[in-house]
Length: 250
Length: 250
DNA sequence: TCCGATTTGTACGTATGTATT
DNA sequence: AAATACATACGTACAAATCGG
Image (tube, rainbow over all chains, first blue to last red; front, side, top):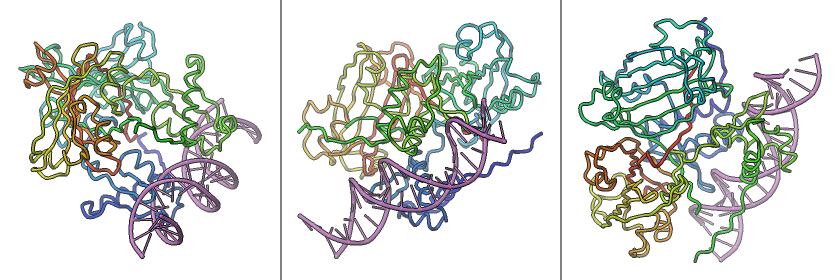
């Protein structure tokens, strides 16, 4: 049962792919201007509306910027960014995109009642049992990410096997629960190894080390909360970037 | 010279405002579904295309989500979020939105040659002089944000006066340099007070304290780099949230 | 300073497809 | 099977900014 669903890409997506490719082929130091909408539409064989749509999407991603009367230009520095904080890839992948070899270690797993706080976040009752899995992700052998996944046991349609804990949670939730995690909301703050024994052990920290921390609640395709993740990153190894629009009202 | 420019809002923006208002008036625990596109278009007196556009924008902001064949729904939990990490307001404002009284202290200011590293970021030559301002922002009297602004002196059209350092940089750059800061790209990581005397002093930290750190390069309306900011946040006081889309390819 | 060419921005309209109930 | 609602794609008209002559 591992046949991939056939999904033809929309024209919009195809145009975007085409533009990505074109941008990669450009010599940006000489010229960072894209052809005009008309020309792109003609060369790509689609309507100008479709081109506009694709360009606007890229503009929202900050990959390009557009100036009325002048043209459309590529944001050079954005191309250099590897890991964006506001997209949330799977951890192993994240480590590999950062240029390291990745390894996972399952530190512990248990099934216990949720308790008040977690129950509220996951929209279940405090007596409902949750699966709790503690993992460490290594980058070239060094601990880079420590995380704790918690999800309600009742969403599982089949029992878990030992190998399941090693898998990315998202994949597991899809396979055993038929739930796709599409988005999350996370609180972002810092933690320090000197104030938490688990962190000290996970990161083998002999002196105090600051960690980037995200506590997130993840939602599925029907907007149901299904997973809480506590993430701790060593930012010496995982370099995040973020693009911010200034919301200053001049 | 403080007359505000008249800027009529686009229909799209007006529709968005109208929807924001409508959403705020909803009893989300009873019903979080918005009226359909047709109905909204009719009631707002605009075309369905315009409504679609506005709805899609809100959807990209994660305020709503849309399901083909079902309808458009409000994301309850997103409404609760105060400070989003991927928008970058002015610091005083940020502290007030977090529910504190804000105060600024200018710790130091100087004008010196840029040096190699900064010159490259600001696209100037290393001998060009930069203005460097060190500030601490207090939340209810407690140090919450420490920052260092650096920008090329040559963008100033008029000399700086002492009061200028107290002002938000963005406002100053507009007044004295006619440059609007529209966006930035930031590296996000952590710092620890025990490893930096400036930080230890700024945050009056007796024991090691972890800080959320952003090193950002800011760009103006013509996409020119004009400002580097090193930001250090006490996340006990400033609570950031972030909405992430999972880019997992199922 | 103004004009015209170019280029993006805004708004409307319409036809057809696809998911949900 | 039909009705509803969103998704995709094409097309058009006009406005506004930019730039060269």
